[in-house]
Image (cartoon, rainbow, N blue to C red; front, side, top):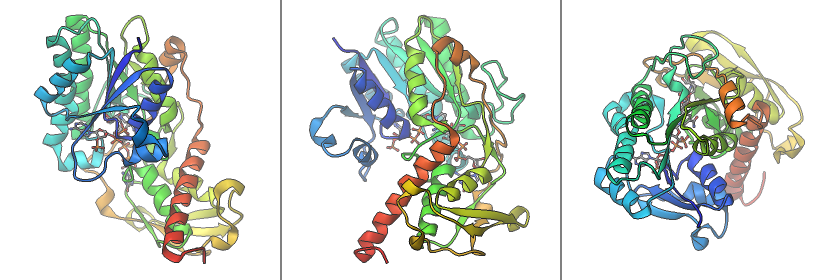
Length: 374
Ligand code: NAP
Ligand code: GDD
């Protein structure tokens, strides 16, 4: 009999990679999707390609982690061996605009799932993974951050996830449940939501390079993150639930880069160099040289529509947050030792994969507009 996994948040970035991993491992995968007025399976459809709808490998159920009766009914029906709670209002900046909803979903959502497992008497059967985050460290107390670093969240998102973290620990300690946190640092991919900084950059720069847009408007480009690849990180989620004993793990690369460095790496793939002038809100990114695009990036030199001296990055006050997490850098030694996990995909490779994917999207837009390349 194959194991049953229930994934909340299956329509998000990590849901796509995790469902693929679990299907490959022979799991029966159930995914919770929200009822929305637009098609929220489009990311999965793009990821899995033709045949996704027809083969029905993933068993979808409508549900919402803010709805206890619905969640309890689902768990009663499926009786999963493993639950991966990925559902969240996951955008830090948006959490300042919707703090109560964020808490309902990101804090109480975890509690609702844990309580459903307990009240259904599944606490010895069902293992629970909570998608915790490096945002818990917020205004960091030490660097790099480990499982023992004190938390200091800096947003309604971080504060909500702090409850999610501790309630997971509490159900483990109170009821002997296998409930564990993955404290994951930022992880990205071509499937990343379009308003997170890495994807916003690769989408906009691709369009700028090919002449579909003029300028990218950014917030704090000096903040530093420890960026890994989602494909590597979902493997850690699975490993965390396969251990003898439930424990919490930091999952990171151990390396950090600034947002500015991410921009520089992204334009380099398209053959551009960028220089920075000015300070604060007046800082600008200016094209400083145009070389050959990387051979496999799908664009020829003649397709590049920017020229030396063009201002392609500007700063806009609306993208700054009321409180910022300036720097994050994780220490994944515990995961290395106990899970045998380490990140495989390096920063340069991640940036490359993302920009090449978005250049392809931009080329498709041009093709649809013009019937060919100009
Ligand atoms: P994402 O792309 O934003 O996906 C979030 C998922 O949650 C989507 O499927 C979304 O559904 C779903 N969702 C939102 N509100 C919900 C609700 N009330 N009920 C049910 N589902 C709901 O996030 P991600 O990057 O894949 O991250 C997955 C999880 O890991 C999140 O919990 C996030 O906070 C956490 N995390 C992410 C990172 C990272 O760098 N990516 C790092 C640490 C922790 P719709 O498609 O309908 O919106
Ligand atoms: N989104 C965004 N948009 N961020 C910007 C921008 C912009 O225009 N300009 C600068 N930034 C900065 C943010 O201020 C932040 O310091 C950094 O870029 C990264 O922002 P995001 O990509 O939005 O991610 P995040 O670090 O706030 O949160 C992500 O990672 C967390 C793990 O540390 C999310 O995926 C969270 O769900 C996750 O928990």
